[in-house]
Length: 133
Image: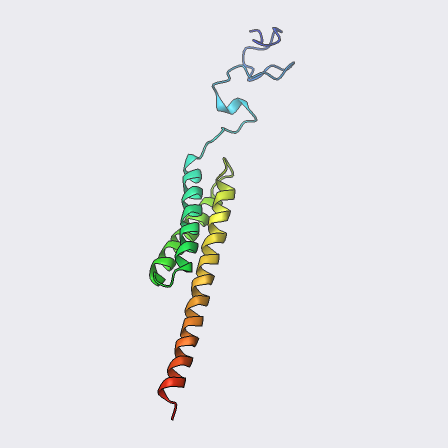
């Protein structure tokens, strides 16, 4: 067999040309370093979903209402992000999954701080107005 790029003769069982490095069969994803390209498309979807849920959770945490919705959305973003981070490192999902995890944690912390501050503020207001003689 001959290389389609440089024209030199190569063994019939070759995966790539030993002279120029051109793959014998470019349609085979295993010819480039032995690892298929974009093998796990599901991790990309999980990373994107995690990032979107994390951003939505931050927006919900900024609102006075939606206390439980914030926790559910942030928890879903956190779980999907952790699952995506445990998948093999193909595609661009790792960065998006990490962003989703960080945004979800920030949203949870923001909502907890808001709940604590509102609780302290309401408690102080009730104490000062109800028990003021």
